[in-house]
Length: 204
Image (cartoon, rainbow, N blue to C red; front, top):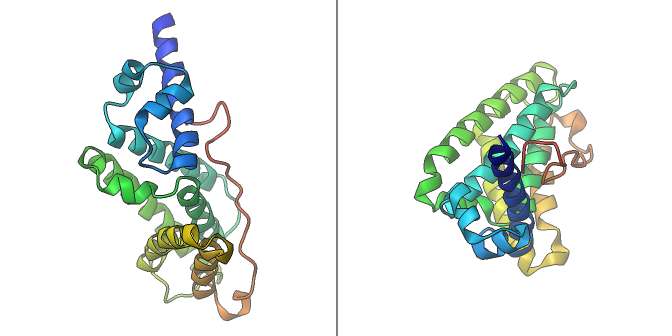
C-alpha cells in the first residue's frame, strides 16, 4: 500500500508541476522542465505519462472533472454563461493547450471523450438558460463551441499585443450574442474556479 500511495502522490505532484510549467512556458514546454519542477526523475514522469499527449490529456481530463463537479452544484439558470467563462479561463491558464493536444495522436481518444462530455454539458446548460429566458432561442451548441476557437486565437493575438485585452473582448462578444436584448449589456462574469485545483481536488 505504501508504494501505491507514493505513486498516487507522485502523479499528483507531476500534474501540478505540469500545470505550472505549461502556464509559464506554453503547452509545448520541454517535459524535462516538468520533472525538475516536480522534484522527480524523468523515469518517474514517463512511467506515469509516457508522452506529451498523455500528460496534456490528463490535465484536460482533470479540469473537466472539476468543471463537471462545479456544474452539478451550480444553482442558477445562467450556468451556460458560467461554463463559457470557466472554459475560457482554462484556455487562458495554459496558452496553446488545445492547439497542441489536437496535434498529438496519443491524446486523440481521450480528447474526443472530453469534447463529447463538454458538448453535452454545454447543450444541457444552454437549454436550461433558454427555458429561463436567459439565452436567445436561436443560439445553438455550435455557436458556443466556436467561442473557444475564437478565444484561443485571441490569446495568441493578445500575446503580440498584450494591452489589447483580446481574450476578454472575444468572450464579451460571445456573451452579447448569446443573451436576449434585455441582458445584452450585463458584465462578463468573473471566474470562480482556480486552475490548477487546490490540494485535495481532482489531483491536478
